[in-house]
Image: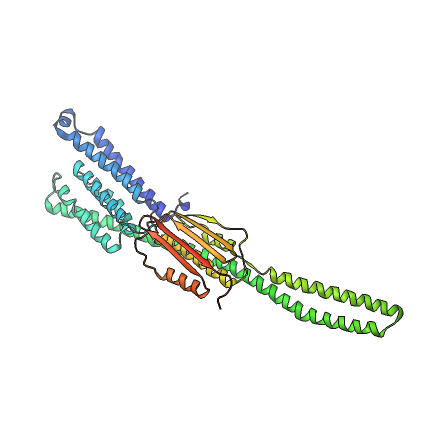
Length: 389
């Protein structure tokens, strides 16, 4: 069963399991080994309630912050959730007078690399454990020096957990990159197979036209001449052969025309292959079946545009749903796409969008991009099928 889980799922469930197990001693401390009724009256009950509330808040925040972990950009909201996690862990230790918060910080250390860059993560790790030093100092038998040593000990444990989280993140990124490359390879291979099929049909049609057509034409002319030179029953057979030769020449020309007319690439199959298995993104395709494109170069350009749209929705837009529509009319091919990502007030095109525009411009196409903060991204791509002069 564990083999079916991804790196992020394993990390998430391992943290939740540790959180649940840690709640057992808190439960025992609260209800079974807690102070008597006189102590509760003296003010212990509020502290226990705060500790339990902080513990429960930690679990809820951890569940939220690890949702779709690794499939979205680092955001300010994640940093605020990370701060809330740290505050909850410190509060648990402060109100219980134990090292439970330090164990919770080990859970936090596992997700720090996913939420902030590694330099900020190391500083964060040190500071959150430094906040536990006053908590340890108030414990019975702890001097300030021992409190510092205790905090450093937990720093070592948490550092190990953070390295494991970093390795898991790198493995998840490598797996996603491999999935993306495999999808691109399968889609490109589908287009290449279609292009090879078209090239082979064109080659065969040329051979039929140049070889059979030439010889049948010569045969027809010779039979026509022979029909004038023969008489009687032999002439009748020559005329029949002449008629059959002309019919065969007509059939060859029709076959050549059909082979050339059927030389179109099915773009819809390649697009569907490209959109398969994209994690944390629901791609809703609207494609005609089949979507035939006579020019393999135009089909390749549209495939690369669709690939860039999907990549941007996952890596940069932070979208969960992408609507992608392809259509064809008398003016050419058209892609309409929109996502439910964060959007932006000002668009700063990266290498991907610039490359898309360059490919389209080389074929006479264009792209319009509409975005706004909180409104996602929308693209309208048009590509004429007739080459510009």
